[in-house]
Length: 410
Image (cartoon, rainbow, N blue to C red; front, side, top):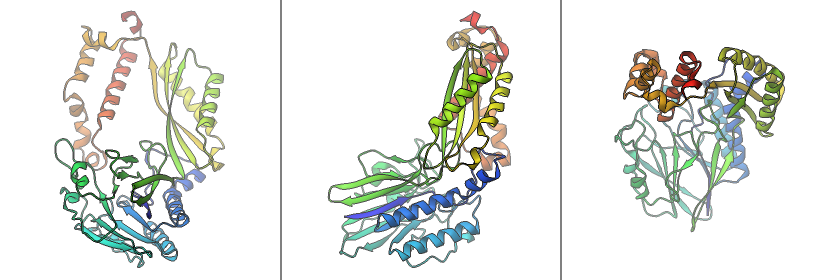
């Protein structure tokens, strides 16, 4: 049996997204979080007496590739060397080898794959042999299907592919070593250690093709547990277990309230929501999305109330190791309205609803942002889910502003 840890997307020392004006203790906790996650990864690798550690790309982050991150990582590799554990790693699109920062001197236990698909062998003390295959990004974009170029070489008990990339899109394009599950499955490897996607997932179960996710969530888009995979390979296949590493988790909670909102009932709801989210293992950034119905209070009044009580309920949390820091998210004031009726209505609001649904309308509205030099650099393309969310919020705002008595039309 072979036993190893599969991690990816460490993004060491990368700042969190979507946070501002945190108290000093929380700011320090956030700044250290990726290093804390790295420490937990190394601790677990040593505790599990793993044969080796695989890191499938994006150890560093090009937006903030600090000397501290490089120093901490090399120190961690030396800890594994002292424990007799080998490391096999590839560099990804965020820490590609074309950047002079990546001229690092690693200890002898660290094996870095070159910029072309290659095989590096591992021999266990009991004589078992593993062939590991991988490549590192030469530059930020890799449009070739590199996984298809991996060539299985005989002479090993187990074969493991390491690939930092994304599945090929329906249009057949891709910038991150685009691959198809079918093509890499044909290689008949015992395990595929993927990186690049920050969500933990197995592609086409029961095939042994896994993304472990990142070791520390970096924004409110990266909710849920974060960590790595403990993998055991034997004659029956790959056995994969989750290992938590994150020091801070991101969570989202929808809070639906009915009737007139008072300070007393809002305080009770927020306190209960916080305590339900609290964890003994880590801190929590909790985004609360509010929806209000059957109320005569307008959005601005409710927004002021939520902001005041969010600040109050956060008071003192920054000193707790198991903090829950509340952030208010979307606020929706729901009236009793029928979307399909509005789409068919001759009213001005009906024209606006139909315009929103026109093919290409959203892309045209957002074009001014994506044409801007800063927008092209920092904005990712909208996902289908994000597009639908924007449309829904636009429709809700139109209803609130243009049809305060919409209930009469339903």
